[in-house]
Length: 162
Image 1 (cartoon, rainbow, N blue to C red):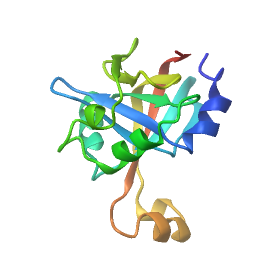
Image 2 (tube, rainbow, N blue to C red):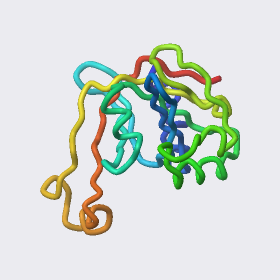
Image 3 (cartoon, rainbow, N blue to C red):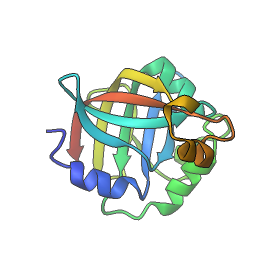
């Protein structure tokens, strides 16, 4: 069930997780610490935010699938820091961060083997966050540089502990 591990997921997400996306040419992962789990349109969803400037944005727009791998028992701070500060356009983050990509069960992307908790999702909706959609306080703090997010609603196709 999608909500069986929701408490652990949300408690650990703020410490950092890996959002992974693949295409025919590459597998990429990036660090996220924002997101939520909910139920919309009769389906379980994992919502993630990706900035337009991220390489992951282009990959996700094309693949429409993603995974979220959350470290529960492992301390992956160094790997999360590297995957949050380097671009997959320039380096192979898997190698640089010393993490292992493994195949997902329900989507055509990778999971981070060193993580315990995994969500596999397909995009069913996306919402660009524009200035008039957030409070002035939120906009000033997070979007004043015109580097906005797109909010992706990913239907959860699988969730499990490894």
